[in-house]
Amino acid sequence: MNGASVKLSQALFVDVLYGELLARGIQHFLPSSELTVMDYFEPAVSQLTCTQRSRSEVVLEWLGKRYSLINAGSTITEQQTRLLLSIGSVLSSRYELLVNTEIVARNYGVFGGMPEDRYVSAFLDPTVFSDVRNLGFATDRISEALEVLRISSLSTYEDRRISTGALLAGKNPDRSHALPEKPAGALPYSSELTSIRSFHRICDGLRTIALVDPEGLMLELVDVKEWSRPLAHADLPVPSARRYKAHTRATLHGGHVCLVLTPNGEIKVFAEGAQQFSFVDGRWHLTDAVEKYTTWLNAVASRELAERLFSVALNLAEARRGGLFVILDDPKYARELVSQRDLLNGTSAGLRRASKSKLHYLLRCRRVTELSPDVLETIARIDGSIVLDRDANLLAFGAILRHSGAADWTEEPGEGGRTTAAIAASQFGDVMKISEDGRVSFYQKGHCVWEL
Image (cartoon, rainbow, N blue to C red; front, side, top):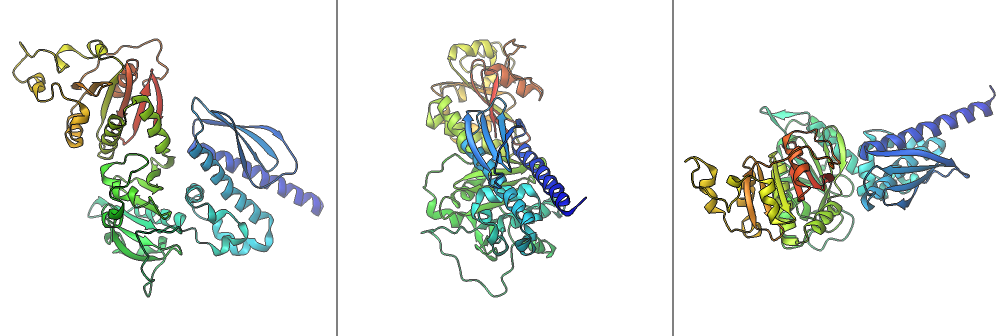
């Protein structure tokens, strides 16, 4: 085989390899999607392009191939398209380095680490991979910080999981904060920090976090509530769990990114005033929280009610407590779904002395939006479901729902009683289910609309 044939074989191998890497990257973040090659085109450009073909299909063009990507049963959102371009940005940079021997030597570091971390990094800060010639001079501090949290998640202190976090200062103007001067001996926020025994004790990620400058150096420790105090009254694009409101507000302006390793062993990524990603169960999840909340808000048609239930659901999920909220299209459906003894307007006569119904008077004729979030969260923790109508009138709490295998269910209830109840109840209205593994799901007409 002559030299030209060898080079051709190598080029074909690299093209096939990177086509496979693209498919793996997409499958990681969009596991229900299907990627197929439509045709081939010339010239074979290394920059990935993405064109919306329909609500559930986009066309990708990359390295001489035209792909069809279909997200089965779901709309491909703006955030998902942004993520696809981020995956393409990282892979294109790596591909160009392989075929450009002049610059690969000073940029070999981009091939290290978890590729999925690089995709998350490119999503949050596209400038790192925007120009392959500058890769050797740019610090991918997001990927490095994620590696710190990933290593930390494998450690314990006094038999308890470690929680920690960092606020990566953005490069945009921030009228509320000015970065401190670089202290002498400032260390890079990188995996080498995890070898320092006391590193995991200096900040807990919930109240205190490490402040990292645009060069990737750890400048100081900050109280996240104090940092976000100037934005305490600013509106968030989507409701947040109580524990992470300060973290989300800290990223509203300036392009800041906040990373937290939670006590549950989950990695949360906040940017642009909302949680953008979570790493749980061994994989990254794009939360797409703003899009999902908007869908929920439009379904409920009441901002106050939608926000109240969404926030409480996130608090329950963070505490790893299950729950179920059912908003009935018509309050008359309550008698079909809930037993008479569980209805707040039912009678308690003749019931045994220890019956929960004896306590119904405490919440009878109350609206969910009139209850404090803490009270609502407390009663949501009671085994059973909270049932209300479109006007937020509380109809039942701790209710065991009636259901049967309906012929028009579009989801298989394979996750236990709560999922079965959610699918059945969603025939009568909108349902939000909170799982004990920390997931929040929205059901409608027997179908899971989204999972967060």
